[in-house]
Amino acid sequence: MHHYTYGPHCAVLPEARALHAALPLVAGDDAIALQWLYSRHHSVPDVPFRAPHHTVSAWGLCGSPSHPGEVSLALGGVLLLDQVEEFGRATLERLGHALRSGRSGIWPARPAIVVTTSLPCPCGRPDRCRCTVGMITRHNARVARNREMVQC
Ligand SMILES: [Zn+2]
Image 1 (cartoon, rainbow, N blue to C red):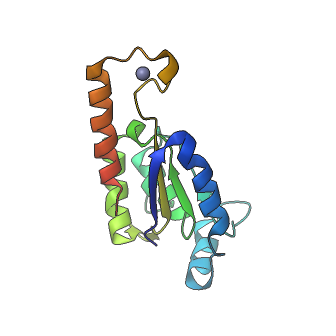
Image 2: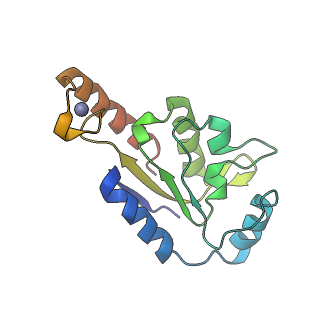
């Protein structure tokens, strides 16, 4: 699955929900994989929706040999990266690699990716914004870089 949506937080969040609702139920081998991925959880979702906080570690996002990460728990569903500019660079580098290969270690890594940003500026409050041109330039560069890292 290589669905990719990108846009400002307020516009894309409803889109992520709509995409999730429109996705087909995970079936076949992926449904069996979900049983395995969620074996430590109370229930297995029909269509996963995962929205890890931007403070998530690389292990949390991409997993370890003993634990699947968010990218794997989102198999066949949606992985929402809300405010992508806030995620760590090393974390997104690992995620990008997993998305391009479709695997993260032993775990599958094939979610639909939804990326939001807090454009147009770092404070996210256009009505009361006091960000400098330099802050906005750096912010936009970080958005562009982080966004590119997870585009596949
Ligand atoms: Zn601002």
